[in-house]
Image (cartoon, rainbow, N blue to C red; front, side, top):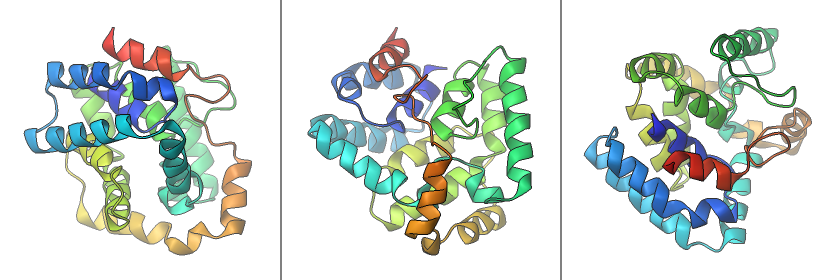
Length: 219
């Protein structure tokens, strides 16, 4: 389902090509109509506002949120396992799931990166995608809440992702995620550790460029 692919693109680093193809992404969402009406409309407003931003302003806003705040990391297992050994094992298992479906990722890519996961889900039947997303929906919900507390418009994208899950997020699980990476995790030392892991974007080395990604959504 291309809706997953569109959401993946919206959570990736906003290169100018992404902003230029926004109308095509809107057409995809309106054509599939997988999102509930309320979330659909809020997301369309987000996309319209994003497309009107100067690319440098859009990029600075993105970096200031997701790159400078570990508590907002788009690497899902950060919010579950932190730096524990369990995170590595979970990565291995998720990477194996990708390979099982014929998806090979580069050594530089981390399989728990949310845009990458959404790209993968776009390749699956809708029921399978929704079920797999349900295993991580509590992390998505926690990120949405954190972004909403900052009055970030990116909360609209996480809210849209959340609606595609086969099951709603359980409140107790969301609270556990919120307690894992608090604002204290956004200190310089914590950020240094995060950057050492070479967080992956689709626009980074080895990933498809944003223009091709947007075109594949619309094609």
